[in-house]
Amino acid sequence: MRKIFISVLCVVCGAYLTVNAQRIKGSDTLLPLTQELSESYLNEEASSEIVVTGGGTGVGLAALMENTTDIAMASRQIKFGEKVKFARAGFDITETIVAYDALAVVVNPSNPVTRLTREQLENIFRGKITNWKEVGGEDCKIVVYSRETSSGTYEFFKESVLHNKNYMSSILSMPATGAIIQSVRQTKGAIGYIGLAYLNPYVKALAVSYDGGAHYALPSVENAMNGSYPIVRPLYYYYDVKKESLVSPFVSYICSEKGQQMVREQGFVPLKH
Image (cartoon, rainbow, N blue to C red; front, side):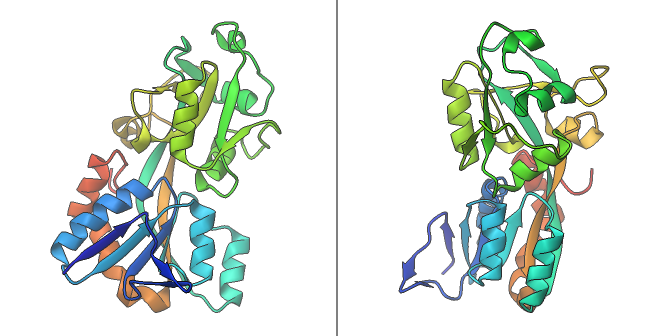
């Protein structure tokens, strides 16, 4: 009998009830994709069990260190300091890119602004631009939402858009992508960022330019694949080589032609593009 446990952990005295299950934890960006791929994989591997939970990249890597997950999902590359900690703890960590993701900058649908340059985004998220009228919008205060610091999405946005400068001190940190979507939907002057796969009609994606306004592109799988949309990142699975026999069949499935077709269908960018 196949079993899949999604976003729910069953714990008795600190141990998983499904002790033989393959455990996958981490990036909320990768969560919906991994859920769909797990279901598809388990339709073919009836004897397998998989537990899939989110929490953020940092949470997944911490769980890998604590041996409470077999695969850490990550929306950023592992840091040098983290590599050192794993090595000191006796782990031999393997990195696999399983997909790519376009990061969408989103605003409330009522906002007339449709596009921003990277420089304008940097100034907004650093608190240098505080009113939408400064970027061609209405006279309305900008309310800035971000993921929390344990999120790989937070780290990537800081690296790519802010050029590693610090976010504004008064930024509103959200624990999950869904919280950003809800907040932007409910707040007229809001702005935030989410993975492309989470984009829905309740928020509006902005076209972005990384060349000073010469060319703008909206976030989409096609624009990410042809290189016209600039905010694109790899998504990773990390695991200890000692667990390779356990996790490699599922990882290989994701990287297969069938798995990568599902990657695209779920709004992510496949490995070959």
